[in-house]
Image 1 (tube, rainbow, N blue to C red):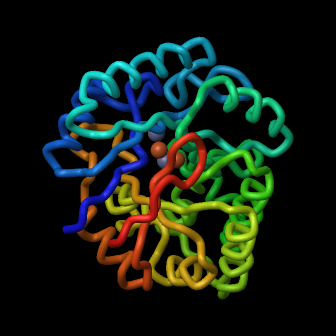
Image 2: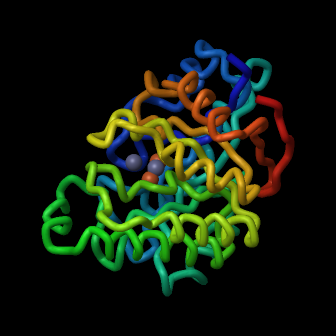
Length: 267
Ligand code: ZN
Ligand code: FE
Ligand code: FE
Ligand code: ZN
């Protein structure tokens, strides 16, 4: 297995992850990762969201916690500092201000909300019975494009999360994905292969092989993320992720520093 970086993992500050940051780092070292990055859920910009994201007041503590492990493990593994921030249309300026407060290595932008609806929240699954599945998918891809155009982020998180519970569109949405891939390329976005989908009802990684091929053809760079909310999930199923990347025709992945692509690494 080539040496890979895991760029997507959480800390207990978000309220729904377990284990101390050092346990995530030790797992990464054990797994043989080249590099890792913490990307915990950024403070929710509309106000506190207990159990989902850290608060605005906790952000300095988060930075402190990650800087601590960064120093403590610097001879063993590179630890990058990031956030996974929600894209919320209309709040771009506030999100931008927050992301400028600290020198992040990269920021993952995620669409978890369609309007007020947290479509990937098990507690909000009833929304799937109230909305047309094709419209939900189209709106999801439209928001992905809007999040890229906002230029707030470096990496777009789990870029077909909308499939999480296994709902499938009945229309062919290839054109939506193609349009989205072109916008990602044009706006300089990178995507991730996120292995957490394997642990969800859909039982497949984000994005699917079919979609990943479209991003590869468009020339969108790639990172890898486990989206671990438990130390034991760091680097999990990365053998499958690498196989998926290669199947889609990817021959390299990228690392980030100071919010720019730092290195391009052969797969
Ligand atoms: Zn989470
Ligand atoms: Fe997410
Ligand atoms: Fe995440
Ligand atoms: Zn995520």
